[in-house]
Amino acid sequence: MKVLVLGASGHIGARLLEMLRATPWAAATGASRHMRNDSSWLEIDSRDPRELVQALKGFDAVVNCVAGDAASIAGGARALARAALEADCRRIVHLSTMSVYGRVEGNVREDTALDPSLGWYGRAKCEAEAAMRDFVQHGGEAVLLRPGCVFGPGSQLWVGRIGRWLQAGRLGDLGIAGDGWSNLVHVDDVCQALLLALQLPVPQDEMPVFNLAAPDSPRWNDYFVDLALEIRATPVRRIGRRRLQLDAWMGGPPLKAAERLLKRLGSHSMKLPDALPPGLLGLWSQHIHLDTQAATDQLGVQWTPYADGLRDSAQWFCAPAATGQTTLDNMICTP
Image (tube, rainbow, N blue to C red):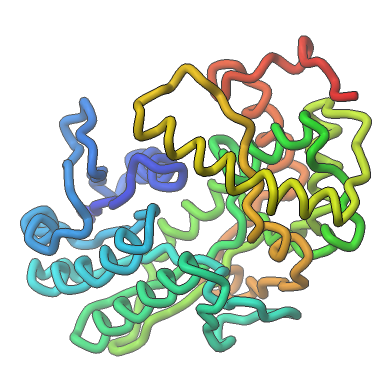
């Protein structure tokens, strides 16, 4: 099977490409906006249908791991759906997100109604899913995966910045503000699900959808404390709601603005503290628990135990070559 991976320079896409190339049944090519020194790599603007049509010719399937802004996510998915039909690329495996469920709480299965109210990201992901449904209605095959929070080696979002916040004493035990379910899922489990989705028999005019989260993923407070202990960011602080809100709402926007300014200026020498997005406060207290029975039973995903994922994450965080952090033995504990 010839497979094109869009967004192959990202956290999930890069790991998927490694795993695909290790299989005996797939010939995988990576693609992103920036060229790599790799003979099996394509430079593609995933928002451009003409570029996509040319790139997709001859491929049996494409995996959409594209991240970025709303135009890249939603517009890119619409462009991909049109291009795949024109290029006769039969199957799209599309990586969505649990954010499409919005503010719902409780045990959430794949047939739960979508809610784009969380903001631009959730709205863009809902629009991208609509493009996949349109692709199926016009004769294509699509499989949708909705992962929770992807951790493990390489995860800057759910390991890197959280570890740095813990080290800085900006994160810890949040009390009721961190009592929501984390829905953590190891990056290798997401990639395993993508591999299985490429080979899944799909009935005509149907679009299988699968939630992805480790069945034993803990609540956020437990994860924060566990990770802090693993990376020796101790003692773990108790962070009150008011302090958390001040950090997110008063400190977050200026830090984000400064980060964007430095990026425009091309400055890579100055390191700013990680901005704490206000949206995370809602996530950490949201009692949403992804039901992943379908992924277990129908896809056959074999989940990485939480303890193993935690250990992998901490080892990556403490590796100087991976994150620029000091080694675990030399790490100074936070006061």
